[in-house]
Amino acid sequence: MPLAMRKYNDNDNDDNNDLEMTPIMITPSEDNESHLYLDDSEIELQRIAKKYKQKHNDRHSKCIYNLAVVGTGVLLFSISIFSMIHVASKENGGFGWGKNSKGYENYANIKDKVPMHSAFQRTRSKYLPAYQATMHQYVHVQTQAEFIAYVPTKNDGNPDKVFGISFRTKPTSDNGVAHILEHSVLNGSTNYPSKDPFLQLLKGSLNTYLNAMTYNDRTVYPVASRNVKDFHNLSSVYLDAVFKPRCVTPEGDWVLQQEGWRYEIKPDTTTDADGTVTTNIEGEELIVQGVVYSEMKGVYSNPLSLLSRQTDRYLYPDNTYGFDSGGDPSNSNPNSGGITTLTQEQFVKFYKDHYHPTNSKLFVSGTVEDVKNTMDLVDGYLKEYDYDPVIREQSKIKYQSKKQAHHTYHSIPYAASSDEDGQHMLQVTWLLNDEKDIKKFTPMMDLALKTLDYLLIGTSSSPLYKRLIDSGMGSNIIGYGLSPGLLQQTFAVGMKNVKKMDIAVLENLIFQILRDVVADGFSSEEIEAALNSIEFQLREVQTGSDPAGISIFLKLLTKWNYDFDPEPAIDFEKPLKKLKDAIKSRGSKFFTSI
Image (tube, rainbow, N blue to C red; front, side, top):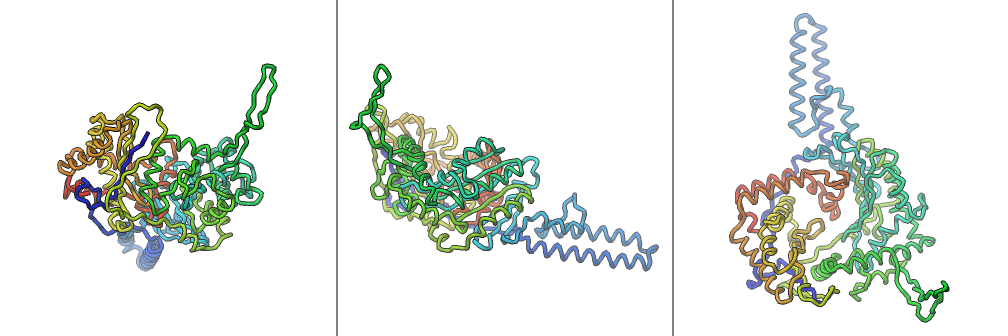
């Protein structure tokens, strides 16, 4: 039974193509005034402290000279000078002295609050009031690996210590090598030769989070624990796994066969009444087995997953997103291979090309002492490598250009449960940005798109959602709207369980709804509700049971992975204010112009 889907490119200029999804034409410059460059603030604090001490000494001399006459005046003068210094330091963006401080003598303690390590060069630090935490950014001097330390002001309400390392892993085929490597590196390493240390950690550690994930263009290894020793052990196991795995050594070639794919002979046996087992050699069958192979067979048996995979293939014909980082078990595209085409040589080469410190992003969340200890641990592995600019350049994700002059239509088959009509699926997908849109896709633009997505499809009363459901042409919404988090964003919407005769009608309805939204706009109440919802999501640091640091790390990677400044991924205050100001100025027209 055919599965119908349409793909649209917002570079489509045909007047008959209904509605285009185009970026907001706003390019505000980024305001970096609130960045706290601690090198400058330290110098300023030293200057102020020195000045204060000098004044104190001068006043002390006057007291000796004429203590009885000017004692009271000196005391009052001292208090006023202290107050002036306190206010000046706060207004100038420095740390200043808080209401619980002990004055200038605590200057030495300020440095103690900024994690420092001889192997790392600090590039920037920023206090994030919405999170009550400070984010410090570093570069490992020898390898240029990037490192972020996230230090909450108070750890009593955020006791989880989090460590994570991410590698930019760019697939160039459907052989699933990135996904198979994610499984394989956790099958023993030089210092932890156990066959399955991951399973042992799950059973025996005090972890509050233990996982590994393969995205379209990155592979992430995060862990968390509330116990100091356990946290250090978890971090050590993961670092050893990614930098010294057994799977890429000659004696570890069995790992690819276990985690990736292998051939096995499925015997053809019969059991007699007396329990005798008879083997029919001629009936034996050669089959494929493997952890990832079996996992992806399940994924590809799901029609929605198949729809998503094929949409990416057509939407991104020229860049890495056109390939399945998870792996194609059926080798459905002969030109891009599949899981069963992956060799040990390709497996090892992909590891060497991507699992290098220069291509890594490291993150830790915890106390200053946790950060320093993690820096020591990390440097122990990184110092065995040197900076490799070739690896960093080769791993960069290239943009898919919006080059189509007209929308395209693709239909693919899938295994339906019956021949009954009404099992088709239709999804319309737009590619929203390419390299020409870098300046337009500001942090404010990201928030604007999220807000517009909520307005269109975020609730049961949203116009796009409600009118599609009310049409009765499908059983439920698919596509789920905006998909951020990668270099290029998409917007997709459609329905499942559609009758063949309704496919074209449903497609026209989607565009008609969008045209009506442009004409009618949104009410101020709808916009306010959407903004409130988005702001609530932004301010909720910890969602679900996962530690807050895990959420912070994964959010940072949505920008950091592409060598963009990671800070705007979590520091939303100024972009949100700009968005509110733009809405206040233009109202609903701000959104209908997108």
